[in-house]
Amino acid sequence: MSNLIVLGAQWGDEGKGKMVDLFSDKFDYVVRYQGGHNAGHTVFIGPTKYVLKLIPSGILRPGVRAVIGNGVVIDPAALLEEIATLEKAGIPVASQLAISNRAHVIFPFHRIVEKMSEARTDRTAIGTTSRGIGPCYEDKIARRGIRIADLIDTDNFRALYANLIADKRTIAEAFGIPFDLDVDALRAQYEEFAERIRPMVADTAILLRDAMNAKKPVLFEGAQGTMLDIDHGTYPFVTSSSAAAGGACTGAGVPPTRIDGIVGVSKAYITRVGGGPFPTEDPTEAGERIRKAGKEFGAVTGRPRRCGWFDVPLLHYTAAVNGFDSLIITKLDVLDEVDEIPVCTAYKINGRVTTEMPATNRELEVIEPVYEMVPGWKSSTRGITSLDALPAAARRYLDVLQERTGVEVGCVSLGPERSETIIVPGSKLEALLR
Ligand code: GDP
Ligand code: IMO
Ligand code: MG
Image (cartoon, rainbow, N blue to C red; front, top):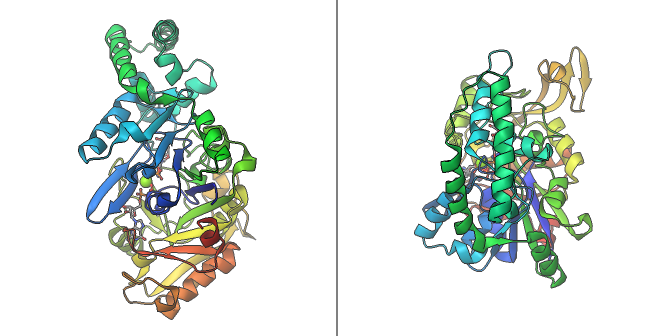
């Protein structure tokens, strides 16, 4: 059995939650390594819908240890609320969840800073989830952040908190912004959160080292997607963490040599929430039909997702950055009614044709996608459980994606439920899950 990273190959919301839930019965540990409650991973178990934000989707499988790694940023109020919701649904979270002592803590002032930054008229808004994610990572990188280990060490916490508040006050004053936070009440609230979180806190890198030494398989659950990665995404329209495969090692404290497989999750088309370039976006009626058929509204913010067509150069790029062993194509069923499906095979940038991902927004924004039209199948694929039973045109569409991206399609998803999935016999993915 392998240690596997499952992550987003596009701009997030690819269906990672569904796939991680499906695979997690084969793993002893499921680990989140970056991001925070900006993620929204939807899992259906029968008719029951769960939306996981901070807690790994593996929590839904009895006996699986769910781990929040050091690379995650944690809003304790959001975490406790998510725990309460899951426990109400009968999931014994406290006994399954381990929280890294090195993960950083989000405070309400992080959200305030983000809102102010997004509202500025002299810069383009990123279109963030307003969860305080970016400003918390800013404090982490600036080496003034507060970690879970610091939060539960009361005397130390008071000193660090006083320093951090002094910092925020100085900045607010410098910009002439009123600083009217009740800092003592906030500190008392976080001290109370600390007591509730304390029993779940662990050195999760050691926990995972011991698990791996005991040959217990570990699944790493990416949040967001590679095109939202702080280094490799469409900067600055990205999130503030390392969503790509490398982030799993730094964000969980696991050596790269312990990773056996890397699997990319991609929709059969593409979506994006928030601002930023999107070469294959279709703002017409056709894009609207995809949004409707795919129920493309954000799991966290409810915002309509921007919809567009499968982008081969983008997938080629994210496959190179991550080293995908296999691709999972989700939501193929959403294309059931499309006559002819555009697939972008190259970019035309100021008259030049390329298949490489440009680094600047100036180039990204002027891309004219070069489309190949692939015939649709115009019939329902819901409930189909083998590749052979798919309409020939649907199989051809998958072949086009596989050939053009150069990565095997190891799995196809045809609906939100566990049963609505085909794992391709003889694929690398099938072997990795064995
Ligand atoms: P994540 O953030 O990558 O976990 O993805 P989200 O949960 O935000 O968004 C994916 C949405 O598509 C969810 O509502 C899933 O229930 C749904 N979904 C996942 N796979 C499929 C599929 O193959 N077909 C359809 N129709 N819906 C799917
Ligand atoms: P999952 O894990 C899709 C987007 C936001 C915004 C940008 C920065 O469900 O795939 P942030 O709040 O992170 O600073 O916002 O990133 N974004 C996501 N888009 N899926 C997500 O998570 C996202 N998490 C953040 O919309 O454009
Ligand atoms: Mg999501």
